[in-house]
Image (cartoon, rainbow, N blue to C red; front, side):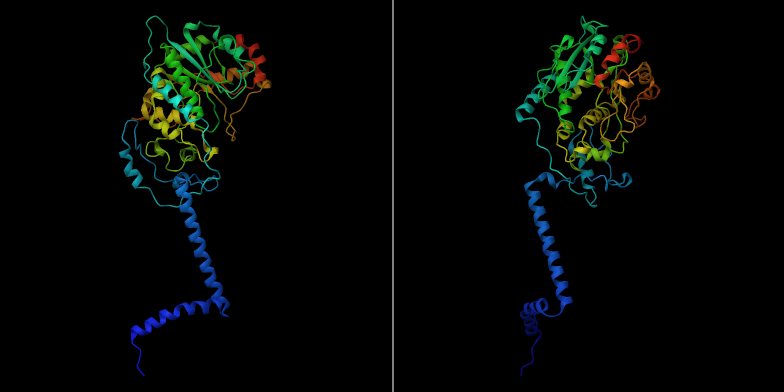
Length: 441
C-alpha cells in the first residue's frame, strides 16, 4: 500500500470538512449544536443589520450623519468631542476646516433620533421669493440716510394672533410723532386675525409674510423679512427692534427712543457656555454645521433683539450661515434656531459691535418646557412694572477679550425697555396704570 503524502491528506481533509460540519450540527452533541447555531445566528443577524444599514444610508443620506444623543446618554460636557477653535470666520474659506475634520475621533456614536426630519414648511417658490427679497435688501445702505429726517426706530412685531396689547402700544406711540418710528408686522397668513389690525397698525403687515412654526428656521426667515422690508421702506430707520405679540413697553416712548438712537451698538444676547449648546449645535446631525459653524463658534441668545442698521444689512446679506441653520432639525426638542442664528452670526462677524444683552425682559426661572413665565392679570400691579425695570440684563458669559466685546461692557447698566410674556387678560389693568406707572420715567 502506498503511504499518503501530505498533499493528498490535505485534500482529503478539505473534502470531508462539509460532512464534519453536517455531522456536528445534526449529531447528538447538544452543546456543540447549540453553540454552533448561536454563532451562525449572530453572524446572520449582524450581516443583515449591516446590509440594512447600508441600504438605509444609501437611500437616506441624512441618516449617515452622526445624530444627537438622547438626554439620558448625552455625553458629559467634559467628554465631548474636541471643540473647534474658531475654525472658520465669516469670510474664511472652508478649506481651513479640514484639519478639524481630519482630527475627529472614532468614539462611539450616539443613537439615531426617534423621528425623521419634518417636511419643509415653505415651498420652493416661497423660498425663491425670500431669496429675491433678501438679495434686494442686501443692497440697502448700511448707514442711515438722514438729509432732512431724524433717526427712526423700526418696531417689528412677529405674530400669529391679533395684537392683544395694541391699545397699550397705541398709547406708547401717541406720545411721539411718526417721524421718529415705523411699525412693521409679520403675520402668519395661515391664522385668522379677528379683529384685524386697525388704527396705527393698519397697513403695517408686510406683504411677504409667510407661515411660521416653532422649532423651525421659519422664525429666522420671518425676522429677516421684517428687516428687509424695514431697510427698503425707510432709509432713516436706524435701530430695528424685534418684538412679539405678548411684549409690552416698560418705559415712555421718549425714554425708549433716546436709549436706542444714542447707541452705536446692537443689543443682542450672546451666550457661549450654556449647558444646552452641544445639543442645539448637533440638532441637525453631529457634523451638519461643519465646517462653517464649529461648536466653539456656536452661540445662544434671546429671540428678541435690537439691531443697528449696519447689522440689519449683515443679517439679510448672509448666505453662508443661513445654509446651515435652515437645515431641518432631527430632534425638535433641542431645536430653537431663532435663538442661535442671530447671536452666532453677529458674534462671528462683529463681536465688538454689539452689547451682548437683550433689552426685553423675560423670566425663565423654574421653566423647563421651552416657554417662559407668563404674567396673568392677577399679577399686574405697579410693583411688577417697577421690579422689571430694576432688574438688569445679563451681559453674555464669554468675558472680555480680543475677540469679544470691549471692556466698556463690564461697566454698562442698560435698562430693560420691553417685557414679555403677558397674558391678554392683563390688558385692562395695564391700561389703568399706563400713564402713572408704565410711561412715567
